[in-house]
Amino acid sequence: MADNSSIIRYAKTEQTLLQAVINAVPAPIFYKDIDGRYLGCNKAFEEYIGLTRQKLVGRTVFELFSPELARVYAEADQVLLDNNGEQIYEAQVRYADGSLRDVMFHKATFNALTENLSGLVGVILDITERKKVELKYRRLAHTDTVTQIDNRFSFMHNIETAIAQLSEGNRRVALMMIDLDDFKSINDSYGHLQGDRVLAEVARRLKQSVRSIDRVARLGGDEFAVLIQDPVNLPHDLAELANRILEANQQPIALGDKTMLNLRISIGIAVAPDNASDVDGLMHCADLALYRVKESGKNDFHLYEISDEPVEG
Image (cartoon, helix red, strand yellow):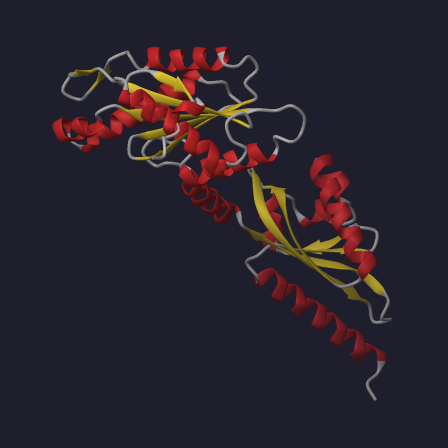
């Protein structure tokens, strides 16, 4: 039977070995008691948050971090300690240089030799770069790469949401379908690179012409759309906006060879629920209004009328 001194030496050796293993792990590791006070950490944790172990041990998150961050950590710790198990969640951590990093916490409770709950241990995984990549691809999925405005996918989602909310009070939304007249000749004469510059400039002018609550999108080719939220004074407001867009795009666009290009655009307008109460119906009405403009000479706007519907016969 081993004497007490042997047991103590073994326990100290095991503790030293455990601390060496923890310090060798490149990910930040920390451990706390059941009152939320730090018991220790590894070197990676010290370097990550910029605090030495001496300044950490015995203190709570409220003594070390901002109230906003401390509240998140403390609430998560309490949930874990109350349920005695494992926990994974995303949060932010103030890095040693003062910047905020996105992290994933992996935590678990641990018991003492008496099998009583003694505290928790946590590992931090930095996911800042992963979040940036996710955000980039999320933006790409919703943004037109040429004009940096909403693409068709994003616009369809916005218009579906807007129409679904029409039942909330006496609300309306208006849709403008916008085409650049004879855009093919621009690509043919100046090349697709200059054509893309024209599209980007039109997008910029459209955004400047509308309110911040309205949405501008490129649906494809030379086709743009504007979603107007809650137009108040119909049809006056829509006519005023359409004229503003026409005037903005009458300004010549300078191309790379100093050629000044004059644009002509056509605008078709429809209103929900006045003209249609669903997405397909609203786009159909706006397209018919746009067709009427192109039929009658272009470079103008037209608000949908029931007479725009083709006559069956």
